Image (cartoon, rainbow, N blue to C red; front, top):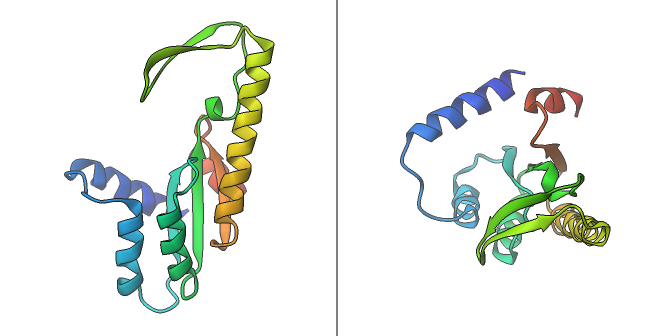
Length: 146
């Protein structure tokens, strides 16, 4: 619990600061030279498949430091249920997810399952612990249960 409170406090303090320039890959690369020997690293991110440069940076770090990776996933990233059309915006522009179509729902869940499997395949060899959190539920409750 004290760790969770510290993470929340640092998160809120970070919101007040100007955004950092750079990528997570660059931050992990910088940490390699700055972390004390044996220090544990905890990363909290979204449920996107990590790019190759990030995996390479984590590989370089994992030899000397245990890494815990917490992925937060919105329930809509796992599947769509319901009988409605959901408005979305992507890099290609605005559109709709048609939850009324059973075949669309099936393809969407299959794509989500493939993304989840790819995330696990890329991260599990690099981290000590990989935890998937549901963005619609209390972080504290999930943290205590894991």
